[in-house]
Length: 273
Image (tube, rainbow, N blue to C red):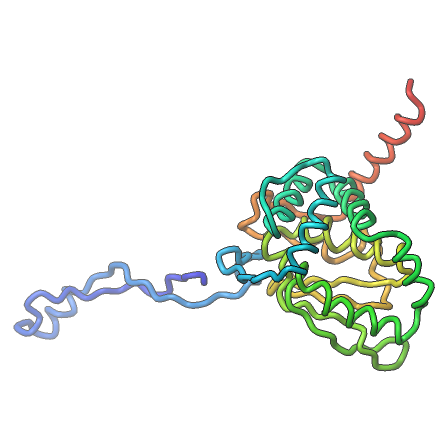
């Protein structure tokens, strides 16, 4: 909650009962009295973040196994190790990657980690058995809510309109666990949103658009919908939370600069002078 000072006034009491009206008015003076009101995110001029209100999770044996498996995959591909356990280890190694790798390298590392975490033969089999269809889109949505709540938090399937008809192809994440724990817009974009969209499309043949809401930390995954081009995605124009240590704007200009620099470095490596 933000506090605004909307009025300042205090009355000097003294021997108030023995004074006449004119004397009472003369003895009035201003000092500080604070009245608090709630202000919205837009009025604050940025995303505030809610690290001090983090959801408490009680992970079961399957959740812990899945978290450790993904954390190990991220550690193996990023090159950093974490001494922590559970979800904290995943957050710690992701934070190391975000601080030491540029945006392009972050996404590449996470895609490689996902490829390591999920066996290619199983993904190929799923892609063969479930080509693009209404059934496949709804199946992926339902599967995500059941088997990936340990990663993103509680979620549910919702309807949307696709190709002129209603489908239950949307996963609504009430409050993303990863975004809540990292408290960083850039980590959400570069270590979750973009890598996940690319990984699902490339490995399962299913386009998916992830639309995070940085005000309430919710998110929607729309299976069957192509996301915007990476350099045109509105998420890149979001300022980071004030509580984020990096406090940087993850915009398209910076992304284009990184792409150009990455391309130039590859040319230099292939043609050493």
